[in-house]
Amino acid sequence: MSGDLTALSAVEVVQKIVAGELTSTAVVGACLDKIDETDGALKAWAHLDRDWALAQAAEADRLRKEGRATGRLHGVPVGLKDVVDTKDLPTERGSVIFAGRRPGADAALVDRLREAGAVVLGKTKTTEFAFVHPTDTVNPHDHRRTPGGSSSGSAAAVAAGQVPVAIGTQTNGSVIRPASFCGVYGFKPSRGMISRRGVLQTSRSLDQMGGFARSLEDVAALADAIAGYDPADPASFPRPRPSALAGAREEPPVEPALAWLDMPYHDRLDADARAGMEAVVDALGPRVKRMEAAPTLSGLVEVQATLHHYEICQHLGAVFDGHWDRVSDTLKPVITHGRAISEAEYQDALAVQASADGFFAEFFTEFDAIIAPSATGEAPMLGGNTGDPVFCTIWTLAGLPAVTVPLLVGDNGLPIGLQLIGAREEDDRLMRSTAWVTRALQASLAEEGA
Image (tube, rainbow, N blue to C red; front, side, top):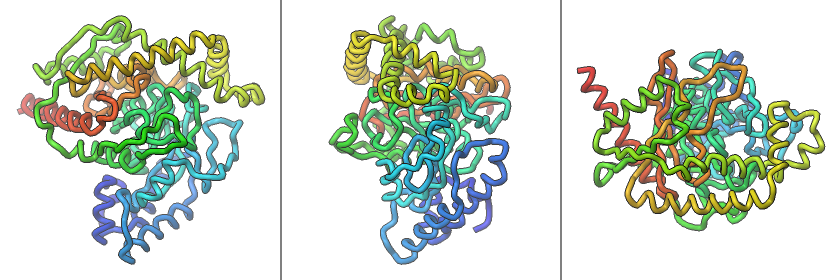
């Protein structure tokens, strides 16, 4: 097949492989070649084994040729954030402390990927312990800028065409924000939709899985492939899961009812992002109800920080104590702060988190989705942090599904994402609303340009 195979979507790759028009070996080889060409500058990958990746692809091709069952991601190369355990590749968690670490088993989501027929291409770079200290990955659109974090390598690799889909994690804003900065789709499904077994635990209350792609269908298909009940994960629920991909392909029964919440922290928006968001609200017109957020809602940002900082010290305390000299100076103050949080403050934060779950369950009886910024604006320059996650914090705390769509462009020509947030365990409804909003905004732009 002629043409750039790395430009194909995951959905297209599966269709062509199943139809016998394309081989996984060809697609995986094209992705590996693209990485060879571009990753010297981008630095998105922590670990690659070309022969192992091609062996997986050859096995996918053999199964197809023999008429065996094919999976929903059959032959599709996938990047894994380097906090996800893989027995065939190191999992170093973005820290020198874990250099050379070889897990004895795959994470649950890797098992799901294998069942779906996917090819694990390699491990993408993450910030230290999937938290605040940056890795050396750069933004594909401007190498002077951050790709965001903590799922830095996954977002950058997808944006650069090195892989069609990749896995990330989100404890605050680590899927939605880098997807926005890199100009790709990012999706964090509802809390408990995807097992976290075998993934670095930084916060048992907040850690959630997500993914990156260059289309809404692809990011939905990826989420569906790795979703499933796992009794080993206390956040996992033993109920059927909605199909995000079916939602992305469906027309909503009625035009969705959307909400925009004016938050006190909206003053952190860059001017171009603010103008873009205002234009979105105006274009959607009467479908959006604009509301002033209650002060208690914006106060949830501090609740998230309390849980995150306290729990990372609980989960990784022995690691920090045993290797303090190898913990970054960026992270050390966070650890010190986390250790100063009392048990009473922590329990209070858990109680507020539970009340937030109840609040949003009621909220979404009236609305199909909340629209919000995905980040403060364009990707910041390298040299500081990986960007402010505040526009993701509340939704992550409440375990709500969230998706970012690369719809806006900032003053420097760099991408800015539009975020939509939905009701817990109604990820299909969120995807329907997202597809509708995307079409409505594209139609509005077309009318303006006519």
